Length: 119
Image 1: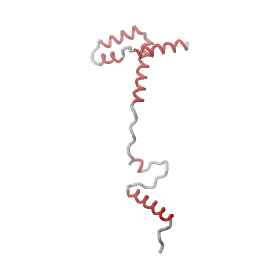
Image 2 (image 1 turned 30 degrees about the horizontal axis):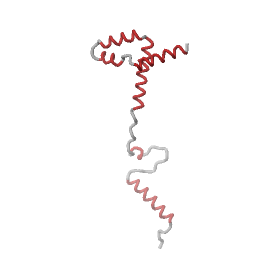
Image 3 (image 1 turned 30 degrees about the vertical axis):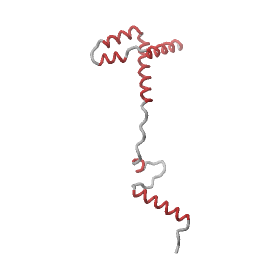
Image 4 (image 1 turned 45 degrees about the vertical axis):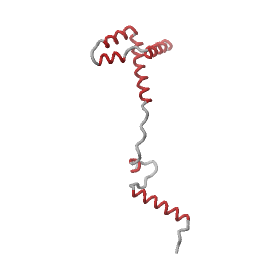
């Protein structure tokens, strides 16, 4: 009789066993680069960090506040913010958020400097 001493046969039967095991788990043949059943049964990907989006939002908020502060002037800006602070409900929250903080003033100075540079 024929003994299983041939290393090629041992390798072949090992591959066949892996294929049969994968088929029992619901996997079939999947070509490289395609989405097969195994793509949907993998563990979910790790969530991304919130640092980037929050930092981008803060830059946008301070940039907008600085642009408004520079375009209408400090006196008019502070007058409008004080009127918001004397309002009711969300007007107070808006007034608190729109206060001229040091970052807003710095951004306004940078915008003014850039305007004068490009004139």
